[in-house]
Image (cartoon, rainbow, N blue to C red):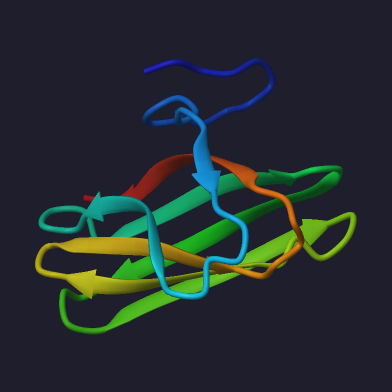
Length: 117
């Protein structure tokens, strides 16, 4: 697994490919899925670019397989109009989003690390 310069933890996997955030997505759409069958906690780092609006953040995920804690912490230069939330689906956590109508699509990228085996 790669180590990034000046970062003292492993990123697994390296940054995702671009995931398109659709404009005016008013029903939940999937961003990514994480397996929770053996790993119960993740930290996901992400970025969203929507025209000139930028957001970076972390999603803290932990579960016992029945109950999910999915907390988003972020910073932006203006509201991106993108809401991120998660749910359990079998042995997976599914991260989903909805977006407002700004007239702009967006790009979502993420990486994650597991905290416990």
